[in-house]
Image (cartoon, rainbow, N blue to C red; front, side):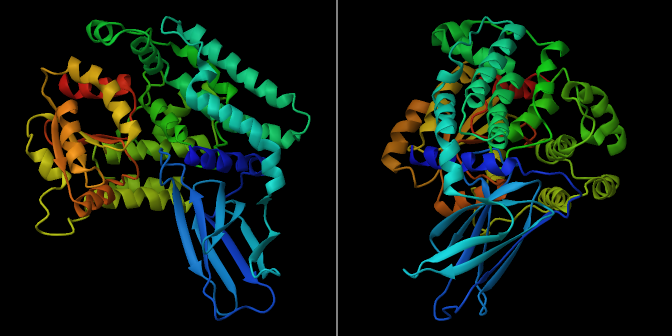
Length: 495
């Protein structure tokens, strides 16, 4: 619960900074500088740290890019921070946190440091935008109320599995309007604060609307016994294009300023949606791909320009690299250099491409327990790898939900593999693995560290799905839900 409140506190910081977001040609990097005012205590060591959200990473843990530097002998410091878009950075000196600062790819932020009477460093904003405690206190109660209701499910407790797409859409939009009305009626909030808080809340509802079929299946399974769910052929109605009229209600060119786990999944959902029917990005040239995408999406979102299309193209390239395991062609590299004005996008995509072409070697020649060596043992089968731990509540909850899929596919050409490390007590692991079923591997800390670094796994549960030829086809951070998992596995089993 402590982490929940800290996350909500950080998210609520954004409401002031969001109002200051702007769109100009970007350099790709924010500049943060500072200097100690007055006599600098040269006998002390001071480390300045900045944590900046990465909107491409869709999980709640380790969701920031972290930078640090020592104060120079003259008491100054400087950061050059790559950004995909405007963000809210948290600044700390040694172990003391000093609050949030607004960062933009084309903006310089400057702070001044000084020592107070109790020999504690104080940070003063000279150039840029600062989020003060008063700003936070003004908005935090409203945001906490919303966040806790979203977290415990009470925010949308009127949803039913038998709702038509239109009923489902209208219910969620009406619930969103109710939440926005609560903010609007608050006389203590400025108009800028209200508008910024609207944007944060909309992200949550946005994802719920995009995943209609998954949510309906989840509601069906929740409202029926396990036996009924396993034996049922229940299939939700597939929404048509008119259902997605809700997209224009959302400001899709203005992402949140913090890492919000729903945000990357929104782009993945759009790319995989049958109605939008967006082709793979390697199926044609980038200008042709964008022209086709904009023909479909511009009417839905109300715009044919903006950050939305940059983000969509970025995630399309990630699909090619991470799901299809297809390196960039030489023409794609040239198109990427030309299209993305913000070099952070280019650097990120090229780094992912390099990882695919030149995978990180094992830390030791004797390290046999790489993921690839495990997958090799099941050659000819689809392999689902689940990274978990005995102490991980979300892992165990996901396994309970996943029983439905395992039962449905128990006679198919698929194997379920579970991987953990000594953070799980071995005696408890032995007991749990009998309950869970499937094949289990108990790796060393170093082996797990290598695998997590190799695949960029920052939190659990996490999942890797390989096809019967041993190729990685999908990677999830957090359980994606039975509908999405079943759809992916069946696409590999019955292709």
